Each structure stands twice: as structure tokens, then as C-alpha cells.
Length: 166
Image (cartoon, rainbow, N blue to C red; front, side, top):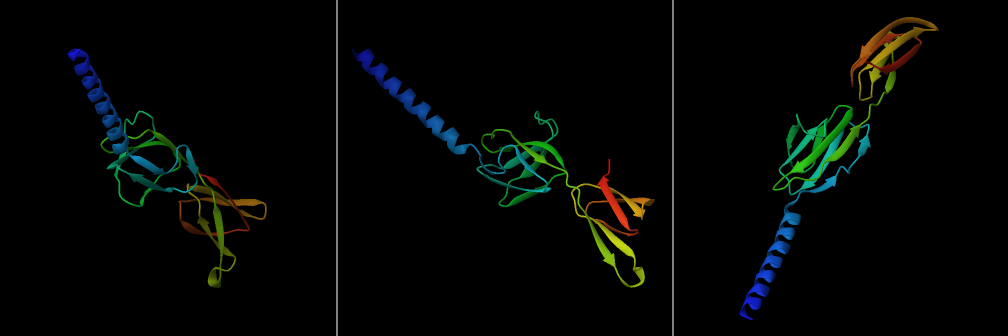
């Protein structure tokens, strides 16, 4: 009779301990607010919003063999090149692994230059990848130039055709 009573007390203690551990693990696991899993964007600056974590690990492979490590702070924005990434938050416990894709954006803008440079254009790479731009005068190809991200070059022509370099 006394053994049954001790057994019941032991079972209650074990149950309370297990419930306590479940609550503790759930409370200390990082809370990921953004970005959502399988997030796709053409923006190279990605905002990470995470609670209960110290670090973020980002890698281009699921095994995290060569991860980049960032210290978590409010409003953490990370600049990433176009590609597929895997990331997770690390605190007392680690979060689940999430996937993120930065798509390439090809955007070419022209600015007509005045003054001495009349008939010339400023060719601006407003996309997220380096561009190779073919310059035409009418239908004749007169040259090609490479334009880095955010870079502006001067060119003379009547038509400009750009595409991703490489």
C-alpha cells in the first residue's frame, strides 16, 4: 500500500518535471518573426527580426559547412548577393533551418547628358547584378561595356541592350 503511494508521488514528480522541461525548451527556443521560410526577393538587403537568439548563421548549403555568423540586434539588415541561402538563429537552443532566395534583378536606366556631352547618355546599373551592355548606333553594334551594380558610365549611342554579365 505504501509502495503504491510512493509510486504515485514519483509519477507526479516525473510528469511535473517533463512538463517543466517542455515549457523551458519552448520558452528559450528562438522566435523567428522575419523573414518567413522560403522567402524570395530581388532586394539584396534582408531584414531579420528574431527574439531570444544571440546569433544568425547563414550559408549557401544545408549542412552549414562554411556559415557566415552575425550578431543579432534589433533591425538587423544583411546584404546578400543573389543566390539560395539557408539560415538559422542560435541562442540557448537553435531554431529550425529556413531557406531564403535572393533573385537577380537586371535593371538598366539611361540619363541623357546635356551640355558638351549632348548626344551622350549616362548608363546606370540599377539592378542587383553586374551587367554587360551592348551599345548600338542605329542597328550597328559600336561597342560593349561592363557596368557594376550601382555604377554609372558614359556612352554614346542610340540603343543600349543590357544583360547579366556572367
